[in-house]
Image (tube, rainbow, N blue to C red; front, top):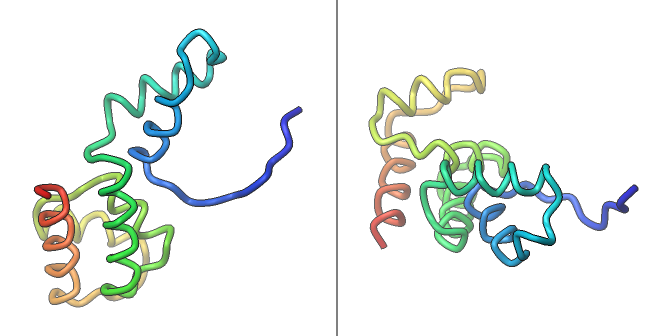
Length: 110
């Protein structure tokens, strides 16, 4: 059994970046599946994702977990973001939602 050294919430893009450092021949089956999944579904680079998460936490008062979820999904409209954040069971002002979208848009185009 492998020992857990550190637990940290990271985005799909960051997982992809980590797995790309490993040779495919050195990966076990789960790692290959995970790499395939992250390659298909990561919507930005690991560095951009990390920067977006930091900005969302600092500027939009999201938790680390919420910020990672938003970056993984990368909603593009206010309606998509509202549908996504509805499950958090906390009120997020339209102004804050617009700021979240602006951060996602600005960083994904950088």
